[in-house]
Image 1 (cartoon, rainbow, N blue to C red):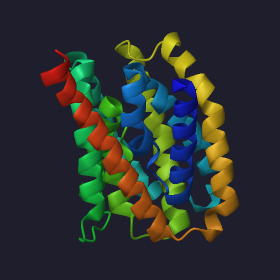
Image 2 (image 1 turned 30 degrees about the horizontal axis):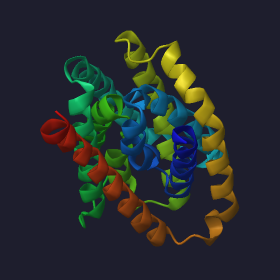
Image 3 (image 1 turned 180 degrees about the horizontal axis):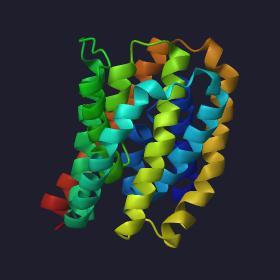
Image 4 (image 1 turned 90 degrees about the vertical axis):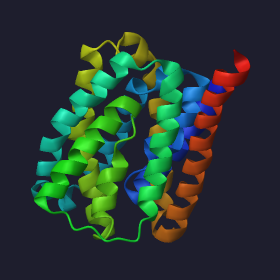
Length: 241
């Protein structure tokens, strides 16, 4: 039953990411963490990389590394900082961190301010993306906030390109600290077909979906998912013990 739930969640996450350009890990990470903490961050990062490759190929003509290049540069120290956090934080506290990261991502997504992607901001969001992505598997919101007012295909293409390079960075860092092993690869492989199914379904209906409706639905799912992760932390902290 747990595997079926994980399969469905990954398909839903892939559907959301293919539709709006990001959101895979936000939607599924807290829920999968409750099933098995080892899903976070390595296996989810690996499945997310597969989705990024699929979307980058679909929107390859809209990719421009001029914008994401500086963000990738900033992601290098961010990835190192995120890996360092994993060395000192237990799975128990990771549940709280994961929930808080998702809530912050939701709040940031609701901000009315329009941010232009200046070089300094690209470096900053690259660092934040690396730190959040490596420590919690959720690295999309900083970049999404900066690119949210650009054309839809441009967002999907450049987010996918960013996720490919940054995903490899994260997996290398996780491997170096022992958080991405053959065991974690084994957890990820059964979920890849679910990601492909979510991607294919999204491409069938993407032209019929209102972007704002999908955005609000994903934010609601994210909030419920984050609340579950935070609630799990407090349950373990004050009642289970």
